[in-house]
Amino acid sequence: MGILGCWCCICSAAIGHVYGKDLMNTPRKIVLDQRRITKSLNTLMGIVSGVVCDGHLHDNEIHFLSTWLKENEDISPIYPANVISRRVAEVLQDGVITVDEKEHLIKELTVLSGTDFSNTGSALPEHIHSVFDDDPHIIFEENIFVLTGEFLYGTRSSCEDAIQKRGGLTKSTVTKQTNYLVVGSMASPDWIVANFGRKIQAAAEMAQSGQYEIAIIREADWAMAL
Image (cartoon, rainbow, N blue to C red):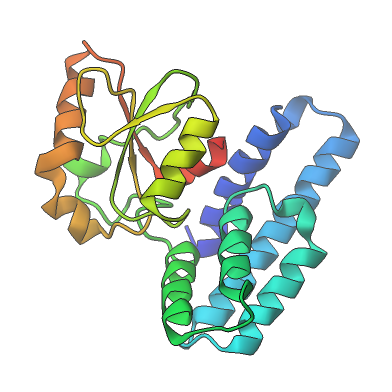
């Protein structure tokens, strides 16, 4: 499956979450709106792929992304447009684009435009890939979340704030009370393999025992549930 194919699947899931409906059982107008949004999301990811393809990010490209996102603000609540829109706005906020900001932004955009584990999981060994919940049902209210890895959404504290604003709780370590372990999209397959014996393996063993209600989920699924 190519990059656009992967994003078609993710876009459909994200839009379904926003509308809370199945495409097969929705009025024609909503279906057409959903298809238009899917097209816009695919266009955005095409733009992002083009921007990062040479390994450099120029000021005019950041401004172009900002303008395009403002002109297509109907997709701003939907992952990954919400992440891209927020990060571009943060870079432009003070009117000065620093080298560090550009380097960090292109790193994030490169991850989003690729077909790495955050989209398909195919880069991971099967015994690790299999521990992820491929179709998670995420409820924030009164559930405990543990975060691991680096997140496209933002800093660890901003991710925790997003959870807490929705009634969830956050902890730093996996325990018997943990409901979700969220793995950041910026965590490379090598990092996940190297750290499998820590939070991820502990959560996997608890989930496989059947005694605890814990799910190991990707940042993409977590972000779509926000």
